[in-house]
Image 1 (tube, rainbow, N blue to C red):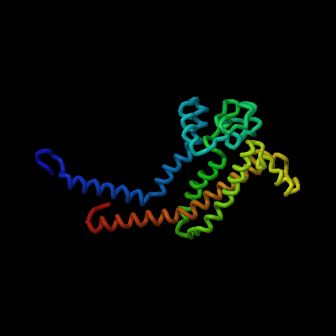
Image 2 (image 1 turned 180 degrees about the vertical axis):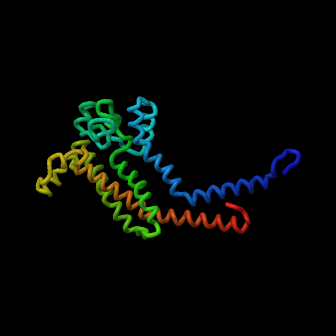
Image 3 (image 1 turned 120 degrees about the horizontal axis):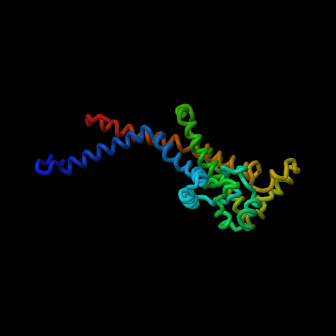
Length: 256
């Protein structure tokens, strides 16, 4: 220590900072699932807080969340869940009645809800199933991680293909206009199944429709594949990091 200033020399301060940083990295490596759950859980949870804030009258906070998540999601209301209303989802026609009679996605996405219908979650049903399922499957995988073999890359690809097909066909269909393409009516499916199901199953995006089921199922498969394939590698990487730091501290005779 410098007796004139009462501070450690630069070299000693750097060493102390480096030791503290290594300890922090070690703790993160040992408790990485907890850190992931907190950070990623916040990311997954914020879209659900948007309708909560709107219901409480905290419109500024709610609209800020809608704005932030609009960067990563189309937020079209007919493909979104609603909270605090009589229905979990609304059809395009219902949205057009209370908002604007338009098929312009840039206009439709601006509708966030109202007291009579409730408030939409800040991302679509597909995004909910994709990202929420990652968190759920991560929690299921972690206590069983030593018993589950990692998914090979080709298996991961198989989990992604259904969502890719569903997403691409939705995109192509939307080029014909929202509510006007082949994935809106699903007439091809009605013919294929000989009209075995109710008309509401084939047409539209409402909860329980074919489109809704496909977005939920394929999004969930994405989440399962992501965890099964990627998380074993994360676990190994964090274990290796923790081991390297632990060995380094033991050689130096320093406590962790």
